[in-house]
Image (cartoon, rainbow, N blue to C red):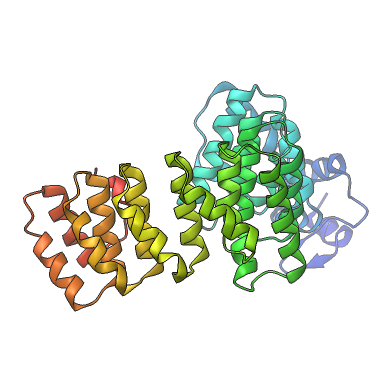
Length: 360
């Protein structure tokens, strides 16, 4: 058989050859690739086009990948490249293949997907994560939702609402609440269709109504819904801020930060003297989030707080607020006897991006 036969049998498209439209069955495609690659290398190159257009994975790609995961072989970057930008049908095929592995192997694989996506922004595993949110293992479902953190597809709102209402695992429901918080922020900023705003509010309110005040789910729902303006949300935030449970006070302060309303400043300032270190740190962080000049004088004592976490958070919030007076304070802190504070102040003044806990 000559290459001329290949050219006559398969219509030209660009600089390659594609399979005829009737070859939709994956088995037919695999046979075509195996049978024609040696007589028509150009056609084989165009298989990538067929894969993209019809949602068929490359021959044996998933089988080889799954086997490597099964035996514990290290996966290379190229293996994950195969999974980026998969069409929905191929993503579901991958997840079906993964289902043959034990849960621990699937968890490790999902974590690797998340890590790879964080390290390489060109990788898009959203379709795989969407398929994984229905996995039988609750840890994988939770991880998959986390993997969709930067995905802003409005179609996910319905999925997350269903999960927060029906999933058997509180861990997964909490992950869904956190994910819904991103869409709430989009709605509050006018970046999401108004039809979703009420759905988001009602879903989070319903979850809170069916949760105990001291449950983690209640707290995360409060934080998620905070950017929306409603009397019941304001009342819930106040309830959290005055609670004897320090985790609720932290959630109240996180909710205040997400609301971005300066009217909450007096409530925040009161918590700068909270007996719990983590609450004082969260209050200091909230001051920076609001960016109010009025908070500067209240933050200054925290630069010498007994807690390193509080000191660093106060310095970072002061830098966020800015101003000549603040810069003078930060310059002084570069000579602090506390080496951690001195180094942190230098890095803040240099505009470096990092988290406080990397200095602890």
